[in-house]
Each structure stands twice: as C-alpha cells, then as structure tokens.
Length: 508
Image (cartoon, rainbow, N blue to C red; front, side, top):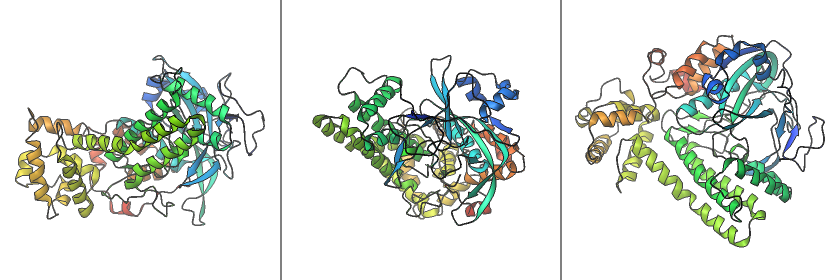
C-alpha cells in the first residue's frame, strides 16, 4: 500500500517519493547474549510461548542475525523539527521494521529492531545502540505500560561484545561501549515527522496516501468516505496528545527529546532516549544534559505538545480547504483546555477526590508549590498520602516511614494545606478512609524507574550480571503493590546520595 524506495542500495543519501527504504539488519560480529525478554509481550502480543527465548532461531531474529523467511526489512523515511528548528530528512537511522504481525485478538503490531545497523537514514551515525541506552529503553517502555500510559513495548534485549564508540556527554571524551539491540513493538511507528517530510518535499499525493493508510488502519472512528476525514483525524490526535502528556505529568515523566520526529501519530510514548522520572518536585526538571536551553523541561511538555501539533497542522494544510484550515485552527486552540481538564482529572484521582469542586485546582496547585519549595519527592509524597490515615494527617502525626510527607511538613503552610485537604475529603459522599486509601494506592505508584535504579542495573550488566535488570522487570510490572524484594532493594527509600550526580545524555 505504501511505496518503497526504488534505489536498492543501502547507502546514506537524500530519499524521495517513498515512505520506506529496503534495509537489512547488520549482524553483530561477536557472540550475542540474550539479556531479557518481556513474557507479556511474547505471550500476550506475539502469541509465542516464553520458552521460545531458549531457541537459536529466536536469538538470531532479535539480534538481526536472520530475518523471517519472506520478510523484507524496511527503514522509515521521516523528517522533524528538532529543538524547534526544521532538521530536514531524519528517518530510521538505526532501526529496521521486520514486519507486521496480526495476533489472535486481531491486533496489528509492527516489529522493529533498534540498534541493528546502518540504513539510508543513518546520516553520520554508525547504526548501533549501546547497552546503556538499550537497558533504559527496555525497562522504561515496559514500566510505562504497567503504569497505564500508552507506549511502545519491548519484547527483548540482547547485548554483544562488538565495540561501539560514544561521546556520552558530548564533551570530547569518546569511550568504548558494548553494542545492543532492542526488539520493539508498537501498533504503528508513524510520527508527526512522517507527514512533515512529505509536506516539505511537496509530495502531496504521497502524503494523502499515507494519511489514508494511517486513518484506515488506526482511526476506525474516522469515516474514510467523509471529505472532512483529515480534519477528524487531526482532532483525534490533538485530543490524545493532550491526554498522553497529562498522563506523563501525573507520574512525573519527562521524555527529554520532544521533537516532532519523536511524537507518535497514535499518541503513544516512543523513542526512549534521555528520559527521566522526576524525583524531587521541580517544574524545571530536565533529564537531558544536552538540552542547554531547557526547552524540554518537564513543566514545558504541554507547551511543546502544542508546538508539535501546530507543526502537524502546518503539514496538513496543503490537503485541507480554506474552511477546514479554519476549523483545524479552532481544534488546535482547544488543546490547552483538553490538557488542563485531563491534568485536573488525574490529579484529583491522585488525591482521592470524588466529584468536582471549583477549589480543586487551587488545592492541587497549593500542594505542588509546597513540594517545589521543600523539594519533596513527587512520587512518594503522593504515595504516602495514599497510605497515611486521615487521623494521622489531622493530628499532623507523620510516622518516619512516610519520609516524603515529613519533608513536606517542614513547610510553614503544610498545616494549612492539610486543613483544606481534609475538608475536601469530607465532601466525598459515601466514602471511608480505608476506601480512599485503597483508591489512591491504585493510582499512585510506589515504584518508578528512577535514574539511579537504571544506572545500578546498567553497571552490573556491563559485567554480564543481569540480575538487577530482571529484578526491576519484576518490580515495575506491579508498580502499585508493595513488594518485599523491592523494599529490600531500597526502591521506596530516599535515593542514595550518589544519585544526585547522575547525568543522562542523548548519545545512545
């Protein structure tokens, strides 16, 4: 249905008049080790028994050693705005789409290797990914799924002994790292940049072809025979992008590189790079050390979503008539309201509030300001509010185990906020304290993938000790449940002192 590059050579070049280029994975030279698999992805999405991981055929597939008979691997052509500026042709520079699988539920999933070698879109890159970044992507995409946030999934992670050279912090210190590959799955890998490149190149017939394909495959509520189908599609993307970013904010997640080439048309979280979960509450939190202007700080993600949607609208303009352009602009203007409505809904739930009150926004903002002033831990402050009793709050009697609330209680206005909060909880009709706590612990995670946890697992993995990756896998599958192994590992305690000095980089 979608055209493929007529030039068969896998050479780095400017590509036109196609959506994909044929590109085969480049196998590693050294021996490959299977680090981890997601049992849920293998069995629940790909209809495989988890025992398949023991076979050589599986290892060959997920490491790029062999492709399935009849499969023609593809690299996707797209462009994008990076850090606010048009970057031209980008594309899958180190990823290979192996094929599409329709499972027993009738769901369509695209299988993609990341770190599997050069493609026509590799630019100056080597087509590889390193163990450090691959561990983070594998763990985080699965963690986000279990937090209830739309995301790509990770089926497997392999590591080699092939040398990959990286300047991790762009400071001239190039170091040798190990090459790794993640098998990622998503219902679509199309992103805003997929449409942008076609609009910028004037390939409007091809843009219509791609739009119709995406709508037909992934937006069943949009009538393909309606002349307003592109407008309806845009409306859905605006709404779901607002929802996605509000969900990110509800768990303190900062994507790190919110370029238009990293924003999915299906509004799922993709392309995990220098992401981070905020620890101490700080709206200026930036996980990416190379984001010098703090463009993608956590508190600016909603605004960046608006910027990216505006770029999508600009890409769609050539296929919209004058009336549709005006309506599309009105739809875009509604983005902020969609976002703040969803944000408020999510934070009401995090505070255990039932129904709506005109003072709820003030209550939420007041708490976040207390957190900011005291540098309280975002995740554990909400979790501890979920576990502490109303009687303990009323008496301002906070046990030591609720350390994040103890930090909050140092603020001179904490008692004022507690008074307002307890009054609001008192207006929850037919509620009880035990019911409130049960409701809140179901939406406020006890465990997230903190940067220091990932780093600890990475350091062990470099020595072929994958035990902490497996532990984190297990823990992050049940983020809302207290787990003995997680408590023993200190995953709900104050972060260790060395965690404050950790940095995350784009170089992956």
